[in-house]
Length: 154
Image (cartoon, rainbow, N blue to C red; front, side):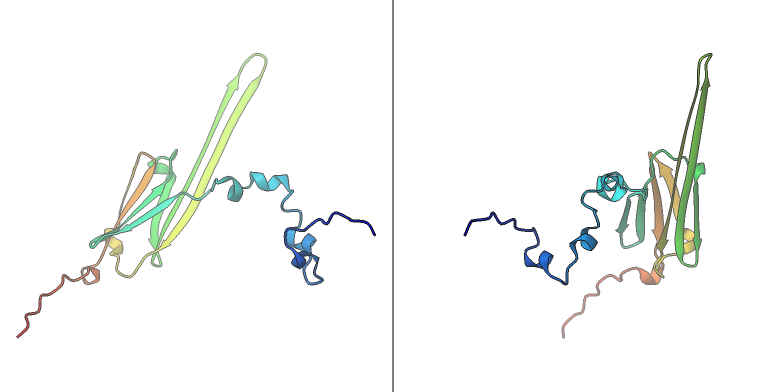
């Protein structure tokens, strides 16, 4: 009898089971170099970051969208949703005796937020400054939290 080095699989007996197909499970995902370029893995996302803060009187929404200008945005409220979209394209061309250089870029996104019933849709205000699109969503009077009432004990 001779000793043979045992190579342990990372998933133990599960990976050698008849009920577990490692090729199907992995599907070469671990070794696919294209996955490294995907936004999910490299931390990049096409959707802008969003912050929502609730106060007694309103909701404050901030959407990070640097590189855009006010005219690039389309904002509307329809069917109880705040719909935000932006689209920007740019192109440059430089002609010289020996070459022509063309550059272009395109960036867009769409975001929809379901508004609570407590928001006054007619009083929604928006502003864009320093790459941040801000919204002030004022609450209806009945939606504001009532102040505590002191009850005297008899």
